[in-house]
Amino acid sequence: MDEQPGLSDQYRKSSPWPLFVAFGLALFEVGIVMAQYLFPVAVGGMLMFVGSCVGILRESEYIKNPWKGLVVSAGLAFAVGGVVWTMTTGDVRLRGTAILIGGVILLVGAIAGALWTGSSMNAS
Image 1 (cartoon, helix red, strand yellow):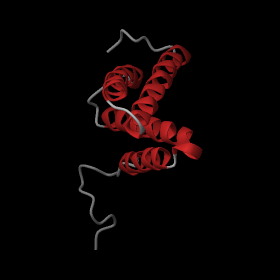
Image 2 (tube, rainbow, N blue to C red):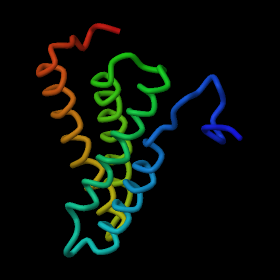
Image 3 (cartoon, rainbow, N blue to C red):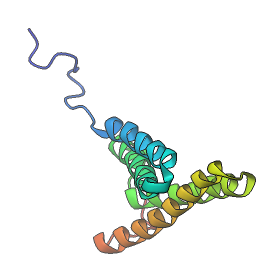
Image 4 (cartoon, rainbow, N blue to C red):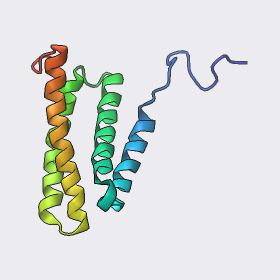
């Protein structure tokens, strides 16, 4: 019998990130559906989703600096949120608002994290 069934010799660990990706999307949708009471949950779910995606990219070594990944993600959030917010009305516009607020928080968090850890945004 194998000591660790399902894992190959090359990869000795499993990643927790996919769980947080799914949970972040679920929180985002719950926050949008019940926006009257849970709009901050939608923003938090968006932050969890994006942060987990950046964590996956860092863990798989597609990016070296997670703070730069968060800055790029904030830019994408501004673009997507801005398009959704300007081209829709009503409840769908609420999604754009949540994405835009999340983008602002991501940008502030990425800059603060880079300053706190002392890592340069210019370093690759």
